[in-house]
Amino acid sequence: MSKKEAYQKKLQAQLDEWSAEIDKLKAKAAKAEADKQLEYDKQIEELRSMQEVANNKLAELKEASDDAWGDLKVGMDNAWSTLGNALKSATSRFK
Image (spheres, rainbow, N blue to C red):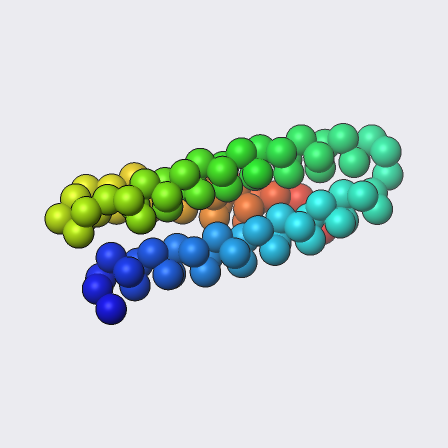
């Protein structure tokens, strides 16, 4: 397995894990009081938007040549860091 393939698998696994976390937050939001539910829904929508950006970056990576994928790695790492931090922040607010 090449470094690119290993990196893709790592990112896909992280995306899958984050998707499950966002689904859990969505379930908590559905049980929240009406005023909190709107706030939670907004945060979840922002997370889903970031998740879509990350999915698009992963798709770009999959299409990149073995030589060019290293150039995309910086953008990928930034997108992953942003989504990861936002998810941690949202999770702490949902408690």
